[in-house]
Image (cartoon, rainbow over all chains, first blue to last red; front, side):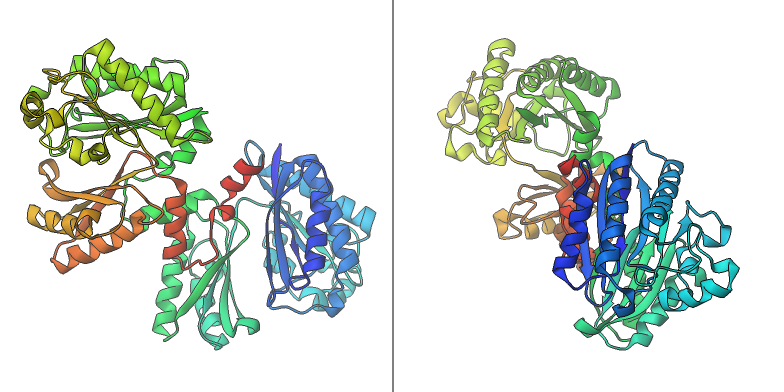
Length: 299
Length: 299
């Protein structure tokens, strides 16, 4: 049962701490770190790893433990919303694994994180136990500073496992199960945050934009730019190249250039195939035209 | 020793004959047909298959035999230059296989095609035995109708194996060894062949255009279009998206729209990665950001 796991940690600046987090994951036989992206302005690191379910579960718990040792949210600042030292912990099915398998794994991880580390847990997306916790942004609303007060008075905000108080330095972990998600950012050559916020509003699904697009406008102080920071939760419907074209158009209309774009973590090959067919006007193009796909499927 | 082989046959219209050619290849244990593209106007079929060297060699000889049974060049017309029923037979290294391995395999295939089928053979590209036969277009100059006269009087035109007379209906086979090549065509929404020919001249390496680009302008009578038909022999230097942009620009300057483009056979994933990085302004993007690559390399 092959599973991908994409923990997001609230640390994106200290290379030694980041290496320690990756080491905790890789310390389990059968877990392989596939990718690691850190961002100074987000002050956040996204690690992608995979393996058999039991290995992935053990790595996830070790990562939560190491993050709690290394990260104190009372001293953390960054432009990305966060609730925990290990902030989100999504399990993603690979191969024949199902989303239900991953939801079950998420629930086991959540129980262990509370029992072994005394960090409370919220379950989101396909692992959600309450319908209003399906959307991660709803769970994380108020962030660490807001929610640690709120949980004490508002029954509806209590963690799914443990608590009700958040961990004093590690907060809470949002543990989820989901399909492939593309974390994709477009950086604009301006320091005018209003431009990024306005574009984010125009394109996100919750404001009537593209289906499956979540978007925030955030400042990138270290680069003197602003960013449209996005999650594409259904790239088959709204792939990155469609978003890039629209953000470029809206930025140009605001008199702002696109500086560059960036992926956080990994992207499925199909998103590249869709873009290639579009940009080169190749109506009959698909995965079956790529050598590596043919060799991998058939040999 | 894994090898790809991409025979081009002078038959692109009769589905039963095309199926028979693919069957001849697939009749060898260990040879897998990966892709098959046929074109009515070119009257040509390109089959991509792969396997261990010995299986691929056997399939190649069986394909040459079946093509000679099914195809009579005296009754063949098409817009693509051709010299044989099985016109070209390139061997391409995969995995740890080298170009030298493929040249040796090409030489063995050529010997067998003459000895067993009495069809003479020219060796080209990395399998060439004469420096002026490195370029396929030089070998094929004059095509079947011209070369069958010329070989009788011009020593310099004689086949590398067999002959000197060409086979009366199957012509000769050009057997080669080469790296990955992308066969890529761009169809223009006009019947004015001069536009396609002029664009082909402007972009091909031999006229000072893009390195590694061979290009012809040909009519597509069945589609009422013209085509810039290309081989990209070094896609790392000149990838398809660069050619598409320039052909689109030249076509627009001539007042002609690009109708669509098409790949003949397979394309390496890296060409998609290069295009994606370019079109989405992703400076840090590479193969290591694609999930499937990470999983294939590491597990």
